[in-house]
Length: 482
Image (cartoon, rainbow, N blue to C red; front, side, top):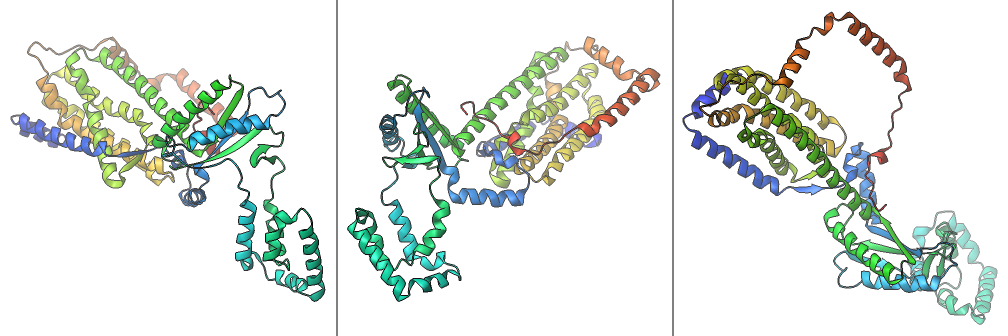
């Protein structure tokens, strides 16, 4: 294996300008393709069970449930008596603003007041599609409604109804169905009657205690479009804050929905990615600073990781043009692995200051380690989770690319950054300590072996007490506002 890298090093040693132009060209192409990839922030992609999840997700998306946001308007002081009129007035202001031109790109519709014709619309559907609501046994009931005695009874009841105040609402129904044939189908709809926990006041939906008013907002974008919905959520936050301030903080307006949760998940993911990446970079810089004295080598230590990541993103773009941000959130692990390759060859070179000898020493362990790590990540492809599939492919390509970049490109960089005054460096204090630890014959320490045996037996005894959770909600991020 070392022969290939020695050949490449010798071939490009006198053609380094052409070599670096080729590397730079490949890097720019990878950067261009990686910049065109789109990011998905759908937390459900982490859920296993591809077949069932796809059916459930498709059913929910088709129902339009994910596009609904529920807004509740109530008084901040729950001890105050109900004031429906004030809640309706403030909710009307909120609804009017959400239907304005400013919110039109994000709001498809608002359900604030129930239409007076809603019942008539339902009945109209029943009248026009009556056979759909009937079963075979229902036709026996219809026969009893068409007997002369039953028809005469229905006409008498209809006549009395038309003479009563109820005629205002029942006239159209009686004219359309004087025999009452639709009553059989209407009984089937009784299961969808209004919940006892809600009541209608001035055509608005209130809770049973009349202290909470409900509005339903239908968004233009689905819950997965978090970048667009994030703008909408920020605008709605400003609107709600403005209305609450106008009411001297006596009003409480809250909202909930899949789109809101998705935005909260995305924001939390981005914060976590920035935090973990920052911690990783700080720790890596501390390790590199302690291990390498030549500061001009610092930027080059990260080159294999950056190049490998760009190539991996470019390949994924060519395959599917998108990637889950959840997969990228584990990128800090890949960064630490790939930086280790360049750090390994650099540390080896500083003790030898001979490129050929360094290539002979580190080529086999770096390449074998790269392929072994890549195969470990590729095993994620067999897991029934879309995000883990993407993570496996991303990590495998990144690791292999970084290992080859380390063996092909880094020798030239180390050779060019070597100064005439550079000498073979002695091992520092940390390296000497690590050498002592690795050279210690642990297998000859009987006390240590006895302790490991006892510890293993204890762990084996208590292993049955470990419980495993399969609640996928534990994988969900929670928005700070929720």
